[in-house]
Length: 446
Image 1 (tube, rainbow, N blue to C red):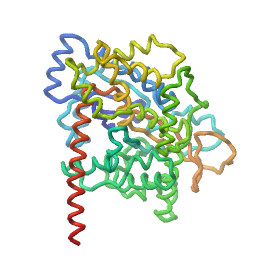
Image 2 (cartoon, one colour):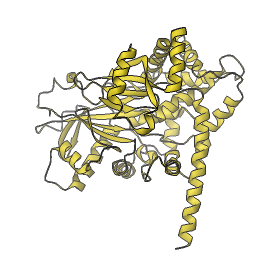
Image 3 (tube, one colour):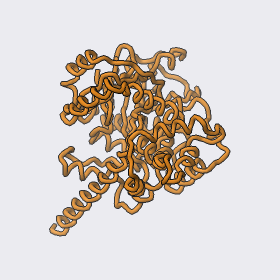
Image 4 (tube, rainbow, N blue to C red):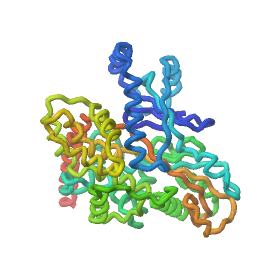
């Protein structure tokens, strides 16, 4: 069953077995070229292994084992991919139908649309059969130096470009900076805005089946009635409680231990805390939003700086930086935290053969700016004590919920995505400026 798409992959959920199969996508022309290169070099499997190592060595430690899945590579044959293509065609959005699945490249992850039984089978009370999963794509929660002068956040301004390009029909009022603020009022506003206009940033699954989202026509009040098992209260009351539930999940530290950085250098990891405080972020340590935001903050300079750096290079290889980074990490001092190590490695002579390492703060940050998270929950079907102090049990006005959170879409970005992002931001700013000028003219004529 198709569960979603990232920019480069299609995720397939095996509902009865609970793993998630992630398969790469290619355009038809690139597929033809790729098939020839795979036959000639056998490099495709090595590419997948490289990406998996990046995920397990860099992204999993940064986010934490609790919030991420184990992953392993599997081989998918041409015949298997053809069968999947035929089954998926009616489920895929129009803008992705020119893509084809790439045989050979696939990975298996945990399916975060479900909670593993070993997470709750030890509990001494009844758990509901139904599992609900809320998928969020939170996007960019803070502005780097080159974006500080923008009149609005990148996501909010991007809405005007998407409207101009007819990719959306209505502007969303969702602002990632509200969600990442940690402020109750702003976070509630952000979650409500996602419900009103989900786009590709908000979806709800019931037992692995999509029941609410941009491409599903459904009354959200019916969804929350099902989540809370309540048919009596007003929809507004239920939706408000749902937003509070999501907010609590996003602000709860679900780590099994009180994790702290073991770092002798204390360069970036300490400064990271300072810039969070200076940007009025009041997120609890080790909650999922704090984890995402701290990784986004690796990019201090912004796309304009890195685009200039990229333009000064004679030879550009999209994935060379991944191999360089992994080789360096394998040989570095364990007494330095990963964030500080990344920033230290990036401080490289821009003229030497390892100059691509200078881009790693931006490219790792870009992964966090584009990641997705899943809040998965099962209702506890009896009254329980509020004093249990079990981290993954969240109290609401409609009972307690067993909760799990997972982050995914954590594969590396191409080096040339720097150029793409810089041009996109220029287009975004232009579209926003034009729309804002038209609005001012319209207001003056009233």
